Amino acid sequence: MRVLIVDDDILCAEITASIVLHCGYEATINDNGAAALRTIQSNPSGFGLVIMDLLLGDGNGLAVAKQIREVSSKVGFLFVTGYDLNEHQDMKKEIEKIGKALQKPVHRDVLKAEIDNVAKAA
Image (cartoon, rainbow, N blue to C red; front, side, top):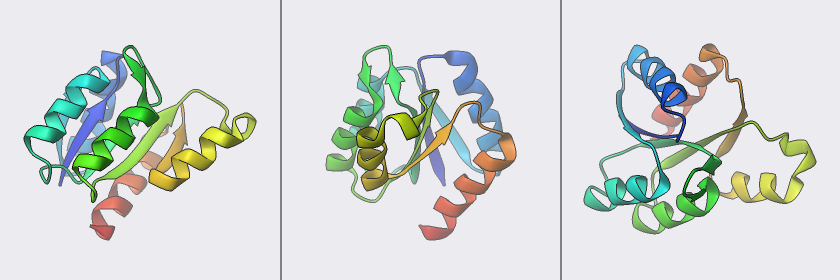
């Protein structure tokens, strides 16, 4: 499975990519939502999972995910965020329509388990 990692914090993206690679999957990093959308548009069935920060330098990760979903209806989503989603119930409900949210910092074992869950469901 190929995993697209979208995070404007390149260090976070690289750490996530190392976990993805350790799990035995391929990783591609984009540092903004526009690049992520172009990546998916160029190969709509090429990725099984997108791991995306909710707050990107060029916009809202949830909005980008909705655009990606229009191009690739089967891709899974894991959102990583520093937001306390218990305080943002509307956002939490929107995320749950598309994928799953993980609270930063995400422990590598938790991330690995979630990646494996998406791979098994594919």
